[in-house]
Amino acid sequence: VMGVFSVYTYLAWFASETAHLEGVSITVIYFVFGVCAVASNLLSGWLIDRHPPRGVVALSLTGMVIVFGALWLFSRATLPRPTAVVILTVLVACWAVVGWMFAPAQQKRLLQMAGPVGTIVLSLNSSAIYLGQAAAGILGGALLTRGPRTLTLVAAGCEVAAMVIFAITIAGQQEGAPSASAAPVESAQHWSD
Image 1 (cartoon, rainbow, N blue to C red):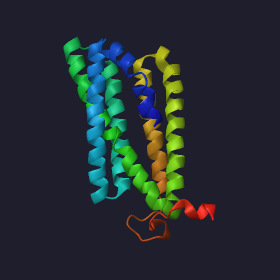
Image 2 (cartoon, rainbow, N blue to C red; image 1 turned 135 degrees about the vertical axis):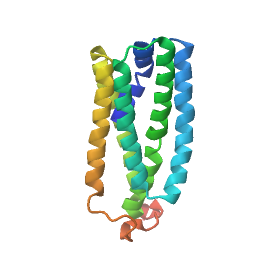
Image 3 (cartoon, rainbow, N blue to C red; image 1 turned 90 degrees about the horizontal axis):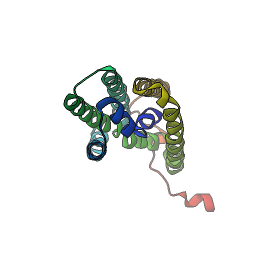
């Protein structure tokens, strides 16, 4: 979350600094991002219905490292404005596709791991997302004076850290092995009994 939102929070600034976009042009970048994010959520749902969610999480995290690396390279280049606009639009579209695959897959993964307390785990996950978004805004804001290169490099670093944490959490787990945590989620009514 921190990698994604450290750049997304300042996407207008990044677009202005790297591709010299302003006004309506930035709106188009956000529109492309939004459309691709919605399509990505649908794609993620389709993928996790057919494949293990941890594979989709791994694909998303790997894709985000690659996209932020590409945005870092892009921020280093000196390109004519039309070329920069096209490249930035393509990179933002790729970012939205790989980035927004993550949440549905992670949520399904957490539900499978948590079993009967899955709804509680998802609420804690939501809280962690909001905390990560706030921290990303602070981190991104602190990096603005260092320029777009540093911002995208740190974002890629955050995604690498997420990959390491993800690898640690799946170490020793067997995909598809039956376990008690794979039981259906029960209603939370028993907590009030």
